[in-house]
Length: 160
Image 1 (cartoon, rainbow, N blue to C red):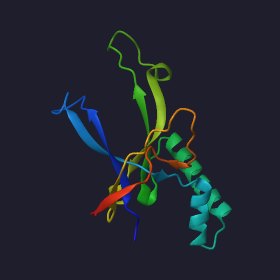
Image 2: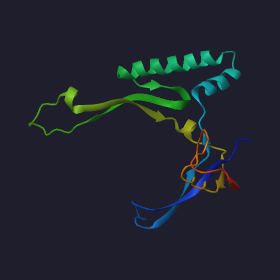
Image 3: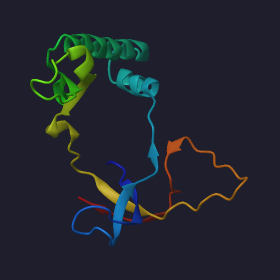
């Protein structure tokens, strides 16, 4: 069974929408661990006949080849993850006042991932509310390699 996704409640003033100017409460995920690329590859390798280095090499090669295709203007179906396609920003120019110059007016060419809804929609997860971490006093240090803002203090969970 999966662990519940931990969250804390955060209070702030709404700046947009129908609740603008009112105090709102919103859940924020917390106590997240970052899985390093190397550890991820090792975990995949344990389920295959490949080594962790071979898994890493295949993932790196797949992403490099996909990027080359996108740089050529192609759209790449990247399996369950989604579709990779080229995108960019373009400056607006007034018709008749200036000629369009791609080298000047097209900005920030990038790879856009259009994620697969099936893959990126989490199903069967539960949630666990935890208490916010107490702020550290000046001069003290907190040693943790997780991406959390709050300390883990369980207070119950809700499954979906």
